[in-house]
Image (spheres, rainbow, N blue to C red):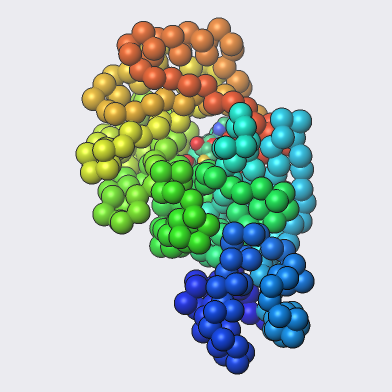
Amino acid sequence: MDVLVKYSLPELENFVESLGEMKFRARQLYSWIYSKSARDFDKMTDVKKDFREMLKARAVILDTKIKKKQVSSDGTIKYLIEYSDGNCAETVLMRFDNRSNLSACVSSQVGCHMGCDFCATAKRGFVRNLEPYEIISQILTIQQDTGLKITNVVFMGQGEPLNNYDNVFSAIKRINEDLNIGIRRITISTCGIADKIKKMCENTLVPTLAISLHCPDSALRRQIMPVENRFPLDTLKDSLKYYCDKTGKRVTLEYILIGNLTDTKEMAQKLCDYIKDLKCNINLIPYNPICEGRYKKSAKKDTMAFKYLLESQGKKVTIRLERGADIDAACGQLAGRE
Ligand code: SAH
């Protein structure tokens, strides 16, 4: 069976011609798959019947299955998606305010090898990279299932996107071209693979960048995030400045508030020092408990004191809304479990 989501438009044209059909049929198919999020060939009413029958015998749109679907009380939907080899990874639909921001949080790998100590995905270990079409399939799955059009994509599901560089950037090109989502609405989150941050600045399409900083103290960061050994905070900052200079954009620094560890006054002050000369926004993330976790949430008063200290030094700070925590769909809780 041919899996149509694997094909770009020119490849779809070749496929259609190989079935002895006119090239323009490919555009019809393309529009049904990407603009109208058709689930099956029977929906494609302007495609003539005998061609639809031929397609049914020869091809599928997606080769993935929804293994499990959970809906949170806040409207977040988590899908556990099973790929053709039986591996699973989540994708999450998040709704903010209104229909004009429908974000898909996608996975770039099954598992992850970065080993961050507070993250459920890390505890699972690394399984494999996802292919570009497997990333696109996640977005199409949400669109097909809900009938909604995704407006924003964040690479904040399972995996470290910059460790699956080629596939992730092929997927970004297709998200932009086939799903028609602007590059400013596509965000990569990384734990800080500094050389790849610099490399991506040379691409034609450079996405919005979010950094899982989580700690401004090199010794402590090394304990909770092994990536600090390879790309220490200084090297990371270098690459962030490079990104800002090259793109004119700001970076978002993500910062998990872990009680009595990263949420102290001392850490707040170190964070201020670290970002003094950096064009950035700060997004504070409440720590989400994971099983086998040995950390705890920051107390409300400590969170507020932390935020206040940053703001008093002129920094723009937001606290991330906790989405989908009741269905284990929140940051760091994705482990591919059923
Ligand atoms: N590997 C990339 C993409 C994952 S994004 C990265 O590190 O950025 C997932 C986000 O959730 C990251 O910012 C991650 O650090 C954060 N996270 C992981 N475990 C968490 C937890 N228990 N509570 C809150 N956030 C967590």
